[in-house]
Image 1: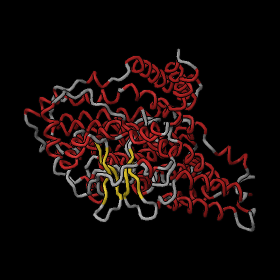
Image 2: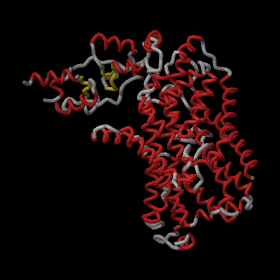
Image 3: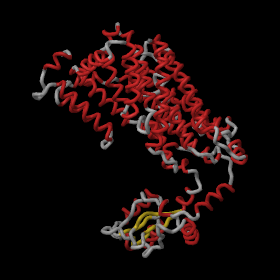
Length: 446
Length: 151
């Protein structure tokens, strides 16, 4: 049934357009209140979409982007195994030592390491592994940990913007549009590097200049033994080899005619094999069970439910109506539309979950293709959506999962993260990063 | 046989307002792994033991279970650890309790108690079901002695 036909049909006496819109709005509202787990909300919403007849089961399943699901699951499995080697702890400790105990140099190095790791792995895992080591190191240095944790939040969201696999919005955009790992790297990495450099300079002005350490603290840091952070050397090499192969696979995905999801899952399977080779069947079951247990199933099922809800509104015709309205509002001008998407995505992503927002915006933007000369003409819009949604997460404490993860670790270690003080510093810094993105997008694409 | 038959009653207990120093003294003098903590009126609030004491000298971030951190990279500095322990001496134990350990009831059965002790790997408090009043304490030694005396 076409979108037009669907919008004229009725379900339980209700117009599917209104029904699917109501499901979307209610799901969004429930996700925002956080009273019910977001995976439960998304799956319930998806269930209602199917039960009410907005979509039949086949269409609902077709609406799930399995490439995104496979990419997320594969990367989660890879990280779950490789983190056991202690490699992240090694890098963090090495950074502190390389900074020779200078707090400012350590702030900059930890930022760079966090950004790089976030570009290649998921942000939450990166900060989950970096933040506790950072707290231990700052305790040894006797310097306030807040600036370091704050900087790591920013670095993780900025770094994640640079690649297809760095942040879930990019994964969804890449999968829906066919934009490759290289496309993201070539188009977003330059501006990300620029924003990161500016961010580090600002952090230096705000905090770096004031932090001082005494000789004893510096000696303690110079006494660190990074090699002791490696728990399992064979696993470290296996993990590094497989991660390198996976990244190479992402780079060559287009000529190989492979989707990133297939590459990530294949890499995960290979690392699982290497980790379990030579073990008894029972040990293998135990090990694989443990690794699968570390997959964030809440996120995976949240995505599944969300894709069905968005497919419902798309099928009912709401998103094409929204696209038309947006084009009318911006007068069909590419520059105005691109910059409107960049700023609206950034501000909204600071307040609401950027994953449902991006999932909803993708079909809206796709529907604009005819107005902007076909899919090629939409490229500035995709980069704006990605920059806005990923960088916008830095605006508030609830803007991205990584922010809440760091805040949680900080709170438990006696470093309070309060919403308003964070907002007062983070929101202007986020706006600055969007301003830089605006100049970049304008000069490069418009 | 129920827990009531082999629990230590009344148990030696601590108050939430006791300091870490006082608690450490009691734990060392009586060679206990854990001691129950009860409010003035006798209501049980949690356990405080050797592992809670040791946790106080560790960097808090090292206790973040999900990070799976080990501290092998740190240079051993016993003086710094001693200083930390000294700083902890005046802390209130009420802020550092283990409140997640299971509790037993006087009428709990022996197997139920052994399973709880096995799972918690800990000495456990015995409380009255209706008002959570601390009435006893059971260690794995108590359970073992009770079982052996049955032979």
